Length: 244
Figure (cartoon, rainbow, N blue to C red):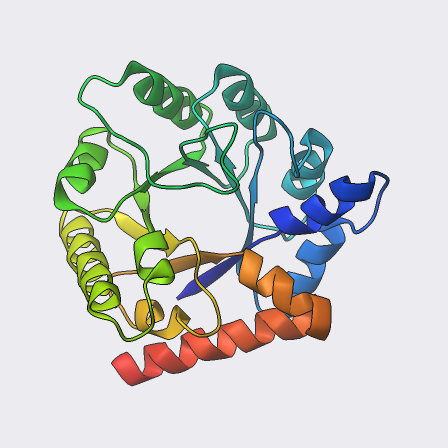
């Protein structure tokens, strides 16, 4: 199972004061040293944390596998086409939200998402869609001919530990992941995963990649980025071994 580390909130800390530190690119290097398979950043329209220069530096850095999260906004899509990250993950975006609140609403005939998918794919970029874990939405992603999806794990992550609500959300993730794999999609997952709840999701065989950011960055305040990624990597791998 791959681990992609989101370094957005390293940039959040930098932007709180302005200036150059802490540097999300340096955080990415430390994350890779700790076992990250790739780096994720979300370039928002309002540039509240990650900036264009950060994406450019990561996209051009030798050895970094970059997953760029973006809304289906023409300006950001044009930038993604120029920088050509390994993968672009289309996500919903609202200006007033603190963090992404749910998956893309893939309505039939949604021109904006269709256009963004086509333009990114034409530039040779692998496209993933961030969606809620339900079969109908997975089927709409299949219809858009993308190679991958990322399942939104927020409902699972915010449910009380051991509750029926958490068990139901985990079961929904399992069903959606299995359905997507049968349809030929690569399945990723993320949002709200942390050191306490990651293992149940890491044990889902149909999921091949997790995107985790805020919890790792928070842990890194006390333990450093490299050690924090190494700890998350250990938890994921242990869960995977037990699931085999």
